[in-house]
Amino acid sequence: MSTPDLSRIIGKIEDLPTLPRTVLKITELVNNPKSSAKDIARIITDDQVLTARLLKLVNSSFYGFPQRISTVTGAIVLLGFDAIRNLLLTTSVFEMFTNSKKASKLNQEKYWDHSLGCAVGAKVIGNALRHDKIEELFVSALLHDIGKIVEMMFLPKKFSRITAYVNRKRTLMRVAEETLLGYTHAEIGKWLAERWNLPPKLISIIAHHHQPSAAGQFTLEAAIVHLADIFCRALNIGSGGDDKIPPLDVFAWESLKIKTQAIEPIMQEIKKDFDDISMFITYTP
Ligand SMILES: [Fe+2]
Ligand SMILES: [Fe+2]
Image (tube, rainbow, N blue to C red; front, side, top):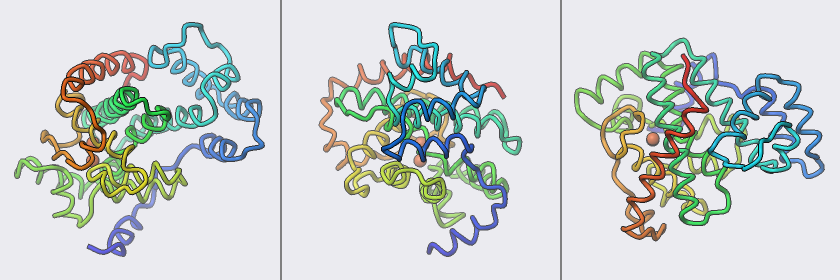
């Protein structure tokens, strides 16, 4: 189906998911080479809830810093601007999941666990491959299925038809979406990421997480998220909306060059890290 159909249907969504102003402001500052850690700290400390969340997460076992970080400036200096932006994006997305009153809480929790599990998975796979942008991988994976959240929150009738189709035909979400909507959550996610002015790499990973070999210069990162998605399903972490394991993009798998004997330890680490981090980002409907 052509793009106009997508924009026509999406155009009907009145209440678009928005990123909090603080995150938008921080994104602006991060993109400006003249910004200092102080400028960014000032914006964050204006928001008490954000400050508390940031410090909680930065002190979690996910980052594993040996010392306690008690100031926002300290966190910024240790993590760097990009990591801080990604971290705030993480907390905002979490908020988006938890604040929705329209969708069923149980569903949201499963989707959140799937997203968080994939984020942890992308981090573990990225580390195994010695990738240098771990936070970026984490956030991309956290957002990879954001299109499903848009469907769940803003197209609830269509979403329940899609879920019914998935259960009836025992098929993948994206197959049901293609049949009933004419496009998939990857396309909706891409559209939302563009609206949010996220970096091109993030947009591309969200758009191509089912077929990373189509992600051009970002194939490696898209392949990592793709694999994290598959591993999480194999590990039964949360739910991506169906109980199928999506087909592996063979080209992407080969490009990652992961040895067969490394798979088991990677999966064990994902499981352990997911249990660790979910204690810090607890889902409380
Ligand atoms: Fe997906
Ligand atoms: Fe997924």
